[in-house]
Length: 187
Image 1 (spheres, one colour):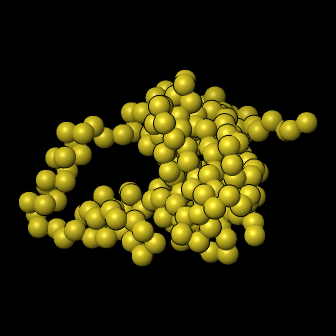
Image 2 (cartoon, rainbow, N blue to C red; image 1 turned 30 degrees about the vertical axis):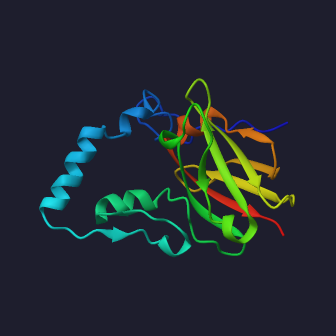
């Protein structure tokens, strides 16, 4: 039986917030609207700021933008650096699509022909994860999600193929729409 995770804090939780559950109201409020984003981009362009490449461009990322926008992109870029068959990055719930799977990690695509995909659940409170291997070799992987204090909050162990894993909605309720992860594959 799994232990239930308790929000951190002491007995004075009613008077002070531990940070957990403080962003439950609507995590979709965090995103900029299209008009706001376009206004920020035009301000950067008008001020003459240079376009920069993503730090992961050598691994395949084609994003070019202004420094402040690029810093936000790099938090959840699909091409994080591989170190010892593992990558660390962030999952962004707001980038998930309700109708189709989208790639969230492409770092293993060139070397292992593996793509990691995600899709929003029907109730929009969480995401589903799957790993596709395009060279027909089965591969084991472990996806570890972290809370705001970099402690393990949820772990998925699986095999590439058709298996789909659902991340519990409590992960996003506790952490918000941007969740750090570590993804490790085996030989």
